[in-house]
Amino acid sequence: MNCSGAVNDYIEGAKGVACEILDLVVEGLESETSLHLAMLRINYCPPSMNKIKQSTWDWDMDPCATSSSKLGNTNNAIGFGEHSDPQILTIMRSNDVAGLQATTHHGIWFTVPPDPPHFFIMVFTNGRFRSMRHRVLTNTLKARISMMYFGAPQLNW
Ligand SMILES: O=C(O)CCC(=O)C(=O)O
Ligand SMILES: [Fe+2]
Image 1 (cartoon, protein in one colour):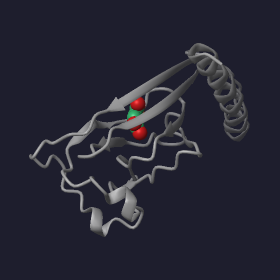
Image 2: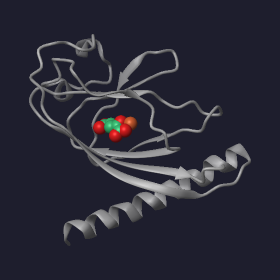
Image 3: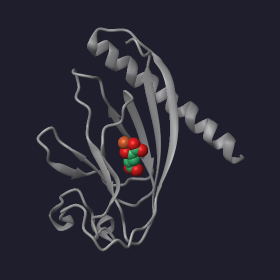
Image 4: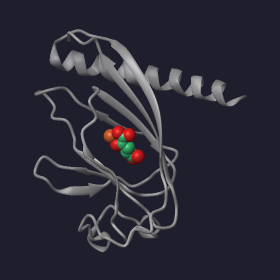
């Protein structure tokens, strides 16, 4: 299969998952909408030799960081700054390089361990579920590659 065929297959699969999740969300909110817009983005976060620590993350104190995910995650440079995704739903898949962190509503950061065969899904709806802030710290040895499928409902929802 060529690259565009593989990407299209991936988009179709992600769309199916996104529609099922969105159906469950709107059922819970007693509202109605469907997936209207979607975007696939591939992020490449190159290894960084930046010596300036841009965050004070202590990988040794991180209960979610495995020994392999700590490898090379020492400089704490920011690869992708803190933000919330604007769409309602994100389906993420990455290679095995750690770096993604999310914060609880109390401002406590935690690492999302990289798990290549699995997907990490974030669902947001204004007000009812609060959108999760997240960021990516760079690795000094390896590039982090992630594939993000963003799904949005109709704008007037
Ligand atoms: O690379 C990641 O794991 C996260 C990237 C991200 O948050 C985004 O593309 O919105
Ligand atoms: Fe994001």
